[in-house]
Image 1 (cartoon, rainbow, N blue to C red):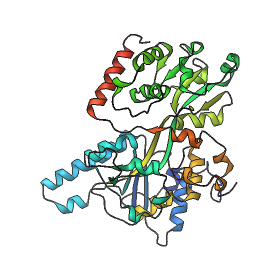
Image 2 (cartoon, helix red, strand yellow):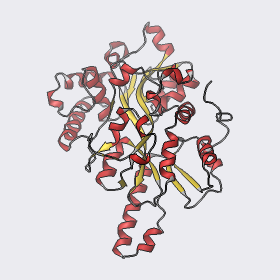
Image 3 (cartoon, rainbow, N blue to C red):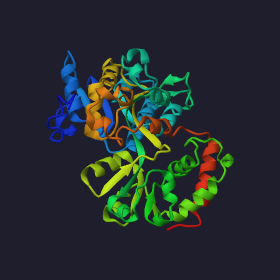
Image 4 (tube, one colour):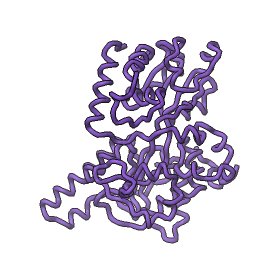
Amino acid sequence: MKRRNFLIGATAITLAEFLAGCEGQGDLNIQLLKNTIPAQMVSKFKRELTSQPKLNFNPQENLTELFSLLQSWQRKILLEKQKSSAEQIKNINIANLVTLGDYWLANAIKQELIQPLNSEALQNWNKLPEKWQKLVKRNNQGYADPEGKIWAAPYQWGTTLIAYRVDKFKTLGWQPTDWSDLWTEELRHRFSLLDQPREVIGLTLKKLGKSYNVKNLSKVENLKSELVKLNQQVKYYASNNYLQSLITGDTWLAVGWSNDILPLVKTRKDIAAVIPKSGTALWSNLWVKPAATVETSLTEKWIDFCWEPQIAEQMSLITQTTSPIIPGINPTELTSEIKDNSLLLPPEDILEKSDFLYPLADSTIQQYKQLWREIRQPVER
């Protein structure tokens, strides 16, 4: 029960309620993904500041909206620059920080929608495990580069999981543990997969002992034949509302994202989940700084605040996503609710074998698209 000094009433306060009256351009203006930052964190951050700045945290429904915001600000700035109106550019209401998914990072860099962060101004940067530091070090084309600039600050992450019906698998006499189980005849037409080429081809690559980020699919032996077999096994593909069939029992298993699955596992005893032991896909939500934002020291203070161990634990427990700081903390210092939850904090050996989905070259993307079309065409249900 350590480090829970501001968790009291966690479900009673919403971010919208806390931020009532904090509208407009403040000293810290953040556009964030809805339900990723508990209101208690914002309240505690404000109390720790010596001054009383205005805090404007504006939740958006999805990452697509947030990426579109970055693009709209860029268009407005370019339009005003053509008019040579520096004063009007200052009046464009641009956030200091924006939530972005790691999937969107490369395009944000290439389109010059964001600017690099100054790691020297981030006191807790070195607390971030290498896996997450590597994720946000990119060159100007958005590709991973150990010598690249730091383009984002990860603040939460999750995994691709296997969720399953406990009662159905009890009749089978076994439980799923890895991707290879999806090819079992007993599961034919009894599970769903995400409608995402990188996810489905990636989990098949993992079954074959490869990375999600293979650059030449044609060199992976048996990849296509394994995917054809998997396509014959699956009942349907879906990236939205895929858990409803699992709840009703229409499917026995679903491959999905941890931010969808963990809240369900927490409330339903008939559904369990597992992280595949051969490794899985990782995703992360990031703080990025818009290209023409107004500079404020509160930007770095907020990022550092999110990386404080105590705050990281609370955020992980409340949101059921994991702070990137958590894997670097000594397990003896973690609350049992985190260290004993393998879905929230995967075992180190599985985490080591898991991959973020890095941007691929155009030629590789075409390989994925072509292979996806070929395997999906024969059996569409």
